[in-house]
Length: 300
Image (tube, rainbow, N blue to C red):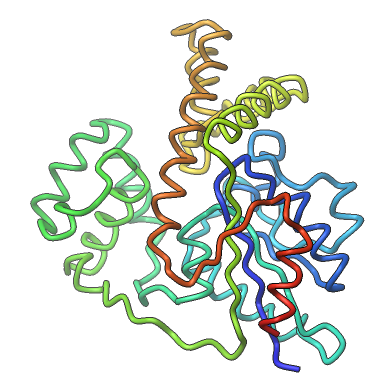
């Protein structure tokens, strides 16, 4: 039987984690995490990472396996997953589940990403220093001078994207655009993409409730423990930046929670917009477990 990577994707709050455990038990499959923040050990609550109990039920990879101070990228994730998969595909286990909501991580494994040079620590520190001193708008203007082609299409509100493009420009002396070929790489395994979605008002309700649950689980204490690292890109994440703002005394705790809910809903819409562009995804309601399993089995 051919090896198959079953990709379970969808927006935050849709219910991927619990459903994938059911799928993993059915197919006797391990789970490979494709959430770019759940890889950091210090952020389990705010990233809704699988609990230790869930990880004991099914073997998970790439959950809490890095420190928050580690540099990690989609390119490194692509390499690491492609190194891992041949070791967990076996004649008795020809299916592996990859799941998460980080669009670039999923694309990196399924399609490949461009061979962009790895940024040196010196360049990374230099650009981060500019960001901390002058802010995002300054970097956006800087990118316009260095690479006007990429400046025209980059998400100018996303510091990580802007910073990375400038790092490549400064390190190589070339434009970031020159490295982007968007070549779809062939993989030595089959790929089935399953998209999970719910009615918008139900997703909103689930997100709002999950944020309250995170607060009850100790999200504020988790954020307090990460204050010394707040400058790191990993913490430029919904849930953390709003509570940092509260701890700075700029907003009330009630307002911080409201902003987390609102910004999570906004991120959910952004995820769906990205995923909807991929015609390889077949969409299901998370409530139709048997229908999803039947579809997977019909394709393998």
